[in-house]
Length: 234
Length: 234
DNA sequence: GTAATAAATGTATAATTTACATTAATCCAC
DNA sequence: GTGGATTAATGTAAATTATACATTTATTAC
Image (cartoon, rainbow over all chains, first blue to last red; front, side, top):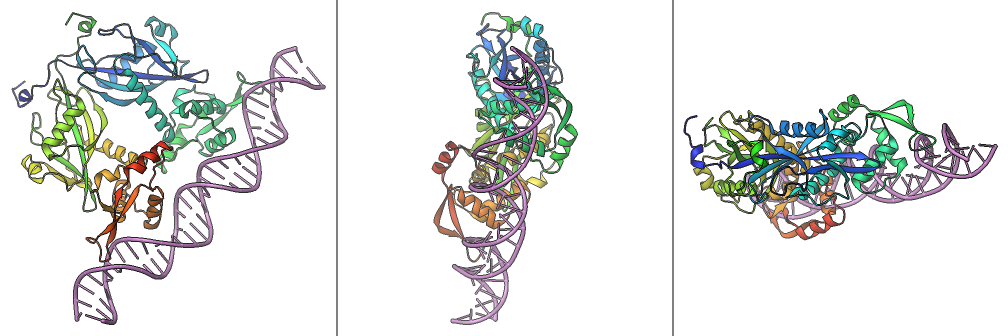
C-alpha cells in the first residue's frame, strides 16, 4: 500500500469495531429481550446484549447475523441497524465502537438448547437486569425506535408465528405501545388495510371458542406501499 | 493491559473508523447539500461527503462536529446520526467503517470564505454530482430519513433563519416532501400547533405586501412534546 | 344443557383533513 | 395619486377518519 495522506491523519491502530444485537421476541403476551453473559473483559460475565467483534473481512451486518445465528440458530431474521455507539470512553478496556442492530424473532423458532448452551436468557422487557457498559442506553433507544417504527411499518408480524390470531396481534401492539386498544376498532382498522389472509383454521389455546388464524399478505402489503405508504395501526 | 479473551477474537489491527456528514441547507427555495473534494486516496479529488477519520481519544460525534466546524466555521449545529456504513468492501483502500451524521444548517450563517478555502460547494439536492464510494447511498438514505423525520419533528426550523415567514416555511416543506401544499391548510395547521411567535416585522424580499416574520417557540414546543407528541405538518 | 370464556360484530358521534376562491397590503410605473 | 401587479392572508363546507361503546356467538368443561 503506498504511503498517502491517510498516514497523516493517523487513524488509531487500536480502534476496535464491535456489533451488538437487540434481539426482541414476543411470547406469553410479553415483549422479551435476549441477553447473555459478556464473554470478554472488562466486565466479563455481566449481562450484556449479544455481540461480537467485527472481523476484518466481514460486513458489519454479516457480523451481526453471524452472532445471531451462533446464539439462536436462526438465519434470515428481520434485522435493522439502530446506530453506532462511539463515545470515546464507552468501553473502559479498549477504544471500541459498537454498531447496534435490532432483530425481531419469532420466539418459538429459535433453538432452545443452543441458546441455553451460550448462557443466554430471555427477559421480559420490563424486567431486564442492568446491562454492561452503555447497553442500557442501547436498549432504551431500540425500544423507542421499535415503538416509532411500529406506527408505519408492519414489523409486528416479524414477531409472531406465521399463523396468528387477531387478538394475539392486538396484544402485541398493546405491549409495544404500552396501552390498551379497543378490540373492535383495532380489528376494523387492520382488516381495512387488506394485508391479512384469513385461514380456515382456529387457534383454541386461548379460548373455548377459538380465534381464526391469519397470515400476513406480503403481496398486498407491497402494493399498499407503492400506492402511497400509509400503514398505521392504532 | 492484561491479556484477555479479546486477544482470541483478533479484532483487526487495521480497522479504520471515519465519519461523514450530510450537511443540508435551504436557500433560494431549494434544499442543498454541502460536499467537498475528497482529501485522501483512493479517489482523492472526487466529490465526497464531508468527512474525516475519528481520532482515538474522540467521540464519534465529536469528530463529526470537528470536521463540520473546520469546513463551515459553525458550532452548535443540529446534528443526528444516520447510521454506520460497514460493508467490508466499501472502501477499496482500507477497511473503513463510516459513521454518517446529518446536519441541518442555516445556510446564511456559515463562513463562505472558509467553505471556499476547503474547496467545498453547495449543490441543489437534485443536482448533486456522483459521489465517491457509497456516499450516494448515504445521501439517498439521509434524504429518506429527513423526509420521514420532518413528519413528526420540527426539523424544518433548523434550516431557516431565526426569523422566517410562513410562506418560506411552506416552501421548505414543499421541497422536503416534494409536493405542493395548500397555503391555507398549511398555515391553519401550523398556527394551531402554537409553536410560532408572530413578530411585528415583515419580510418584503418576496412580495410588495410583505409577509410577517415568526420565531419558533421552543418553550411551547417542549410542552407540546410532553403532552403527547403529535407534531405533524401536512 | 348450562355455565364459563374469549371472539366477533356495528353504529353514531366527534375530530381531523381536504378542497377550494376572495380580499388585503404594498410597490412601482405611469 | 391612480391603477396594475404581486404575493399574503383568511373561512367554510364536505369528506374522511378516529373514537366510544354493548351485545351476540362459538365452543368446552362440567
